Length: 388
Ligand code: NAD
Ligand code: MG
Image (tube, rainbow, N blue to C red):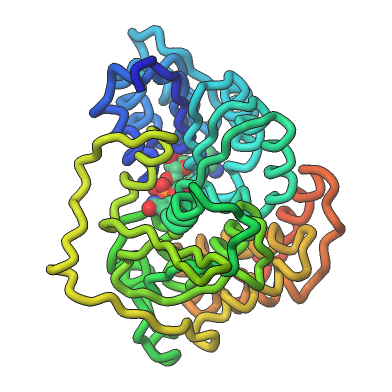
């Protein structure tokens, strides 16, 4: 990486955004920061934009427009706000875009970045879940390089380098099982958001932490893998591996199985995208197998974790089903975080939304948004009923 490259980070104030900036900070001479974005934290965004001498800072929530302006006063850093600005800035076309907004809110900017034909590192799994076919088609049209950041998909991507997708027999996604892996259904009824966000191995944003606790995260990752690695969803399996040391595995037709291992630190997969196709130094802990001692595996429990069944059904039915599932889940997770519904209500609401209507087959992004909006509306009604 001798030549300086330009980088934009969508969701710069989040867990993935901060980890990305940590690596950029250690290699300042190699990167020129174009755009940094955040949803509402104007002060946090402005601090990062000043530190990294960003060309432009974008706040997603227009109501924070003035806050950003004040926080950036005295600098010549450009500023913009609102959803349309996120897309406009994504079109500015940095050499490398980190798509790390959480939720379907990241879809439009990620799509715009992919259309630019440069390198896009994708953490924002919800966008791929909702609009996987359209996103993969956009990348193919523009010639963009799509590099998966999600640790499992990054592991699979690494295990596939040097192999051919047509020689793959099976992909095995590992799952930690989350904080409630050993809880009974009865215990799961009473868990609080504080208990649910306390992931045993990873430190992450609130939404993905709740998704890990319900195992919806692994379901979303199944859909994500189905789009990124076209082997057919029947050839993608999930195994619970509580230590989160093996990040995923690829079995080839000769029954040789490759795995990628590493400490549970997202800077490792992020670094592999920043440096791709070569490698860079990271400050991450090396893998200490003697201390780890043993690696355990178990089959996931479909009764306590219905999200796995719901996501598999959504892939089979295809179309806008995954978008509908994702939107219902986003509403239910937000309601659980606000203590308006119970933990087990999350999957129940997602299932009820899927049962409530069948969305039209999507042809363009507008159809995805229509399915997304309808699912959000119905899920919100269900939340109101449960919260009442
Ligand atoms: P986070 O909540 O820590 O950060 C989210 C970022 O997105 C913040 O910068 C926030 O300001 C921004 N944002 C939130 N809502 C927005 C909106 N409506 N419009 C514009 N910006 C918005 O989340 P995170 O843990 O960093 O996760 C980001 C994405 O990466 C998610 O899709 C998650 O599933 C995925 N991911 C995260 C991890 C992890 O370890 N954190 C691992 C794998 C995948
Ligand atoms: Mg993951």
